[in-house]
Amino acid sequence: MSTESHNTGQEPRHADVAFEGRDIKAGIIYGYLLALGLATAAALLICVYILRLTSNFAASSDRPAPPSRDAHPKELPPEPRLQGFGFPGQEADPQADLRKKIRHDSEANEKLEWIDRSGGIVQIPVKDAMKIVAEKGLSSVPATPVEKKK
Image (tube, rainbow, N blue to C red):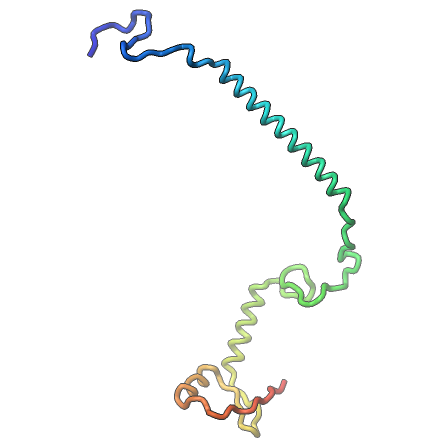
């Protein structure tokens, strides 16, 4: 450690390191920053001018909007209509409608009823039909399709 005092009023100097004061000129850096700020402001003004020009041009060349549905409030849009809010006669909650559809399909798959009693055609649950097909296999002659009575 050095025993020399650093409070001599001069900056400490090292024999191998030198600093040239003329290499850094703050005026030039400030000039570049000013030019950059002016260029950015000019670009902003040009962009705002172009935006206003194109907006006015687009507004002047637009066609008028078609008449709204409010002119005929009782007239519904054509089929198929989207599910959701705002249409009369539609479910208010699409998720509830989906749950209702799944429940209805599950009940139909589990139903046991006669389709044609004289022909011996019965609707049985899907699980039971799969067990029968697994045990006996499918018949080699396809049965003639019978329309279900509504």
